[in-house]
Amino acid sequence: HVEAVVFDLDGVITDTAYYHYLAWGKIAEELDIPFNPSVNENLKGVSRQESLRIILDHGGKEDKFSKNEMEKLARQKNEYYKEMIQELTPEDVLPGIMELITEIKNENIPLGVASASKNAPTVLRALEIDHLFEYCADASRMKRSKPDPEIFLTVCEALEARPGHSIGIEDARVGIEAIKKAGMYAVGVGKNLEEADLTWKSTEYLSWTSIKNRFLTKNSMA
Ligand code: BG6
Ligand code: MG
Image (cartoon, rainbow, N blue to C red; front, side):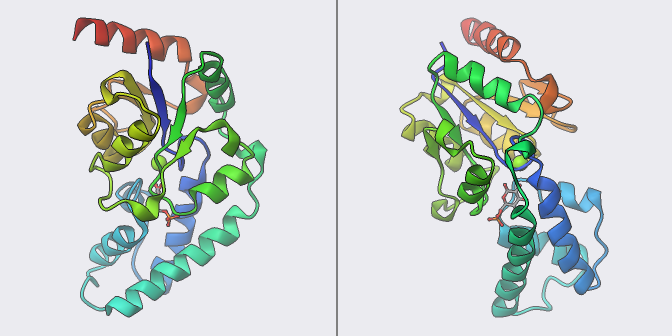
């Protein structure tokens, strides 16, 4: 029996990972730092301040800015990002996700969101799916970023689910690591996620029946 399913948001439920990428791209350009999808891979799942540090580090400018200036840059990135997500509508839920959510809900399994994004509640509302989740972690209250398991453990606890009996779904390497450290079953969506228990190329292939069967087989052998 599956006690909870915990979703990452950006890059799993909707393609806001792309907007984060565009917004950081603008900041990088303003700072004259080269930026490309491969640098962006390291930003997935990582908090706003930590992402900025990674970008500055990549440009060799890690010690060029004061704490205040860094806060200003992070705020500016968020302004760009917020402008981009104003366009979000229910159509922006990635293919396969609504079906997956519906199948899980049909079995009365509680659903949670474990997103590092402070914009997560806004995004869920814009997609009109906020009411489908019993709990969404408050990113501003997390002390440690993924790959620390804190956020996944917090969501499991709020859903009264045992991590060992729960499933996490992620598109980021650090996210998969966090799920595994929490002792949960990790489902990866996308590339370079070898550490997941099960991976799918993209959300449209996600199948609740196969996820559940693989999870139950693994747990019965454990
Ligand atoms: C994560 C994204 O979900 O949230 C990261 O994968 C992002 O790219 C992080 O930096 C923090 O988001 P926000 O909206 O609080 O800046
Ligand atoms: Mg993500």
